[in-house]
Image 1 (cartoon, rainbow, N blue to C red):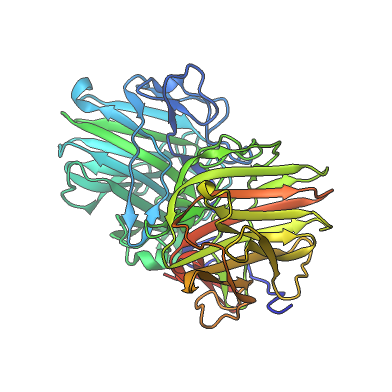
Image 2 (tube, rainbow, N blue to C red; image 1 turned 45 degrees about the vertical axis):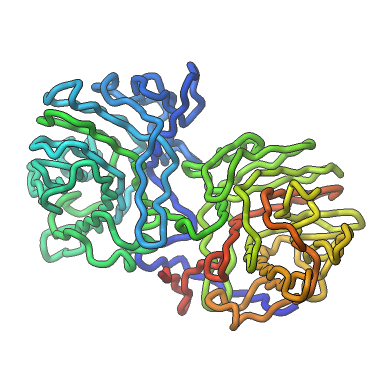
Length: 544
């Protein structure tokens, strides 16, 4: 079969983009209401921060909050809220998982208020990215900042609290706070006259020791509400940039505490959300496609799905879905932290971290279903997803995804995946209810290889017949016209149905192996379902 490339992408990511965010710290302030014992990673609405359980340890002890440390300080004043902050830049939505942290300044007066929490102080890095969403409803002369500090003094040659970075509101401006030689701090005005009630996405990057001749000065860049989110390059020139000896004389920063500080605000509320610290741009500025994407699930586990837990019942927000994942038969589907990827000679499909997987030790029917908002099918529909099969396919063995109309007995729609040892699709062939399997190419597949399916459905192109075009591992993610279709056929997959409203992922009767699925997208154009980053001479460049 064509289009099988043994291409190696070097681990060089230009302008801060990587496939899958790798947070050193992440808190989306996910909240629950009416619960006395929130699960790991949740806060109680309008309750003290001390009534929350540990969150933020994703994948190991070097990530997130310290397991044994809770919020300290004015914990009864900073309260989780069910409404989260959000931001959209261009056609990209900043990933926000619901919930936020709020301080009602009108209720507590204008004194000094703060909360802090210890985080793991590793690994030491020569570059850091920080970000948060912030909003103040009063244009006051006080201070409200987020600070990332080295409290225990483990960064080289300095006293506690004098190393790190802070950002937020001060005297009506958006500011950056850094060390400025010795053990003193300096406040930089990033943007004058912030607007009360407006949500600001603030992104800070620190590149350590970029000017050796300037006594180990570090380059600090700040973006406020970047117009484009897809990469550091796309974001354009920073709102503010400076070179200053802010982190260490000759070494990498070890941040071990995050805190929120307010002083002098006389009224209104301060809200913060989506606190992130990472190695590169995408760690601090993860995004998804804006509302023109009909449906999208990246199966993200950092701040999204719970890795290693049953997928059934999980209800992570994803565009286009209307309910939690559910099942009708025995199911062992679980999210995993490892994502699937696809790269051809010149481009790599954007894959945002995490996937779902079912292990198949016995011949059982294992399926998982999620209701979608009604997907209107009136002209052209595109579907894409990544799949990986490590199983032998025999008679009656199936591993596939299916988008269908639940009100039509599952007849309207299409299946794609592995069918009795052949890779292909299944759908209604005519106006009856008989499904037919169409092989892609010669139908052969390699165990353990990841496949990118791109399906195009054109409704009623010849009478009641719908044209289905399928690209398996398309050689050109930039252009449908430049890609070669593996299948073009007339079918009855949609007929007179006007909607699709369910997504099913299923394996059945396979004796052993694994079935993995990732990056399910539905849209009305090729570009919506094949977002890519450019690969040139082994280096990955994000393409806006």
